[in-house]
Length: 346
Image 1: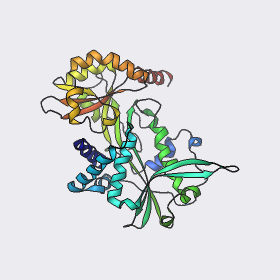
Image 2: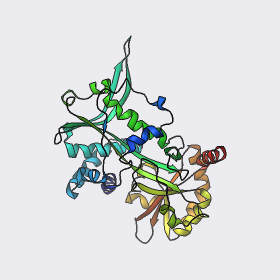
Image 3: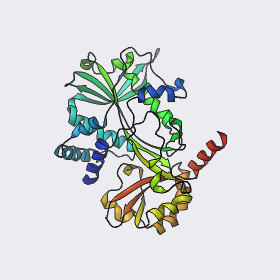
Image 4: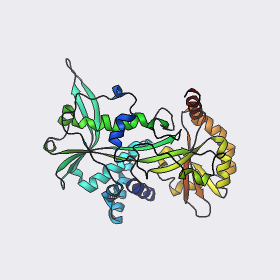
């Protein structure tokens, strides 16, 4: 599993950042309901956003030797993290990366922002900071929010509302603005300021988003060849132009996908392995031939739909054992029904 951890660490550091430089300006435009943004009062200190570049991400740990050491520590940490939630796994990786870069004593994680009720005992939690950092080199405090995002674009339009999570309820126009307008802005409210470690409060505060992920674009075989799909996309506003891109298809199009990858094997990926694919030791038991996969597709699609999920599949080369060619979503009836509904009402 250490090999998988190293692979995922490299993906987290080296893959393109998800949001663009102007995402914090785009967020208010994409927010359909500003009343959904909840802060414990007005913003009282500078709300300074700073873009995280691809180069800065990669250079958090730049040498192969340092990455190996970081991966070994993450491997130990993951043994105690009993969760299948990819977001928490992603946070665990980033926590160790930031501790390696800034020094563990300069990294505070999951810092709650609480306010006492008036009157009576108890407290209200307004949120928490994913990461608070002391950047000694630049003599400033930093508030980072982290996220890993997988969205299917249901229309070739740049608005965030057309980017849906596999479970449909999760949408980029709901989660994206909340990152900038609520989670990051919280540290500039009076209550947020009081939640920052005392020695850091007098320093300038800068906010960053460490977000990685993929936008999946609909492939319709009757419209265009598979090889052309990702050459013609509409990038959602506020996303980096080089963000990771892949495809999603309807179940009736799987046969066309098989034609394109006839000499390959296929596997359904549990959420935990959405970043870089399966660990090598799992390949012999989870890889399937196309004929086996097609036999099971209808039942699997039905079961996943009942859980309000889609099927995330990985295609592997059979000639180069263990070589991952690509990943994409096969949508299930739950997703198709929602997709059909917007096409009939708008």
